[in-house]
Amino acid sequence: MKVLVTGGAGYIGSITCKALEAAGHTPVVLDSLLEGPRVFVRDRIFYEGDIADRALLRRIVEEHPDLDATIHMAARIVVPESVEKPYEYYRDNVAKSLELFDELSALGKNRVLFSSSASLYATKEGFEVTEDDALDPPSPYARTKRMMEQVLQDVSAATELRAIILRYFNPIGSDPDLESGIYAKEPSHVLGQLVMAARGQKDSFTITGTDLPTRDGTGIRDYIHVWDIARAHVRAVEEFDAVLEKVQAPSVIINLGTGDGVTVRELVGAFQEVFGREVPISEAPPRPGDAVGAYANADRAAELLGWRTELSLQEAIASALAWGERRQEILGYE
Image 1: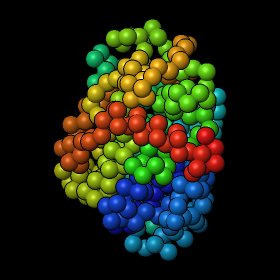
Image 2 (image 1 turned 60 degrees about the vertical axis):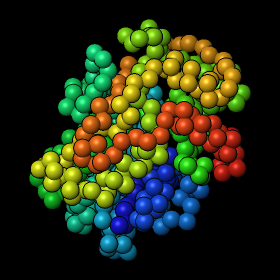
Image 3 (image 1 turned 120 degrees about the vertical axis):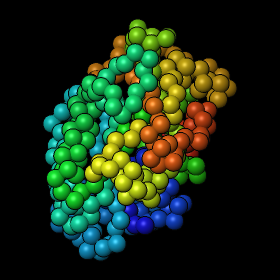
């Protein structure tokens, strides 16, 4: 199959492209390079441009009329930045995605996989959430993801467009060959911050939020190896029509997680175990827009995609540490 991957120069996008190739498929990358580095594209078919550029989308389809599906990953994703810059988040994540979906529909490219987020879920007793649980997106970033879920549900009900919406929990780690990983010079995500502290690039790792209603007062997450996330996309592309046939609907939402909740303190403990020594720790209040957290009930992914995670938290941590050693070689900075 041939698959258009928007945001294919990004962290999850580039690793998903590799997983597609490993399964015998051909990714076609569309990325503005606003964030993702050009080196992550490697030698793949690549178009540098904006997802809302309808003329460019028409050219891509003219040059690749055999595109079978689109994986839409391109988005702004930093929660605190979304609080500071809501306009940019609604413009890029919502308005531009609307243009993309409308043009894909006009071109007859009606299979869309959408990257959504587990940050949408309302805090729930026990913290395990199914796709049907209550939502309470706490940040502009999360609200853009919820809006696009609703857009896809409405558009697929009214047109030939069909959508599989994948709610990611917390991707960590790097690709198996250490060719791509977290690229931000100072990652906002917890594991990237831990790696920096472990390598002496930060004075300490800061736990943000220590009096939350969890078993140890720190946020709870479902940390999933990014290679497992990438594998889930391959399954969703391959089984796209069969999945929607099973649910008898034009769209469906699927959680992608391990099914195991891990607090930030527990993650620190696991990290130190893999790293082999302690990391300096400090504490601070929650960041703007931070959620208490949740972990996935992943039964629907197993049922519809035949997918469950295969890689452990420790394996994800080890790959993140290995990528921390490799970043300089690939990206030119640590």
